[in-house]
Amino acid sequence: MSILYIITTILFLLSLIASREKTFKALQVAWQKFMKLLIPFLSMLIMVSVLLYFVPNELILEWLGQSSGYKGLLIGALLGSISLMPGFIAYPIAGVLIKQGVAYMSIAAFATTLMMVGLLTYPLEKAYLGTKATIIRNISAFLISIIVSIGIGILYGELL
Amino acid sequence: MNKKLLSIISIFIFFIFAMMSVLFSFVPGKMIAWNFWLFFKNMMTILPVIFILIGLFEVWVPRKVIEDHMGTDAKFGGYLWGVLLASFSAGGMFVSFPIACALYRKGANLKVIFFYVSCAGLCRIPMTLYEASFLGIKFTLIRLAIAIPLLLMVSIILGTYLEKNNYILDTK
Figure (cartoon, rainbow over the protein chains, first blue to last red):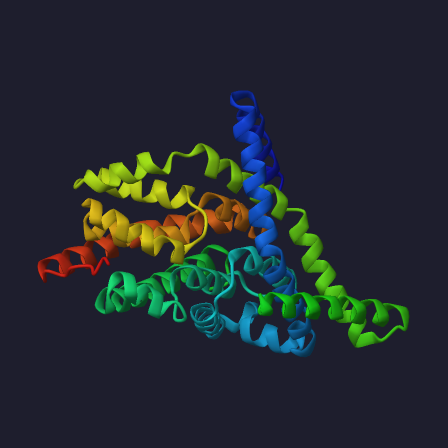
């Protein structure tokens, strides 16, 4: 968390030295984007908070926990492929889940597929890249996500 | 507009529900409110910083220059510009589709285009830092170190294959 603060502060000061107007404009952009996200953001948080209450912790751990192994990986990857939520919301939730004992590998599968595989954005992607390319790209992205997750699992000592 | 109003109302109702639960010690409500508070607190320590970072990028990084480089190039440099453009842009994968098409029209080849689209999901700098602050730098580094080479490989294979088959993007 602290690196983020340090990097941003340094960049901000540099920007301030270089140009006051541009820095001001950057803050304006930041504020606008923040406000635009605030409502979907709060709604999503409320939904997740309610959902986490109703889905018992043991169930989450059984599906995605340290001992879930490949099952957790697969469930994570499938959830990530069909979900459509900004990383801004996904990562804090991931952080909380990890503190509760969910495996890094499951989280990796979810986060990577969330970012690279888009079942719900398929129509949009198809309109731009064409059917064939879209299908091949998504399938290969899914496979890459699995490989990445296995790598994470091994390096965090959750596999082997 | 209507949908937005609905969201605002439901958020408002939730807050009243949360306050009532705390006041009258309604346990399920309190637990839900506590969950919400945990997420909210976590995010508010990081989100403002991330948005300032995005704002700075938006103002200072000359996207045009990067796009021009990608457009004209055929050799390996194109991929490098692809990662760069993806790293500095905000928005995510679906913002990258129209940009990808624009680049294609300017002459970037399919391999670079596919690489760029996948990278836009994968390695935007603000999002990467955000991820690292919740899951640890180790997590982020492993993820990038494994994913980028694989993506590069797949993009080259996919692009070459499609170009051989005279695949043409329909850029309206």
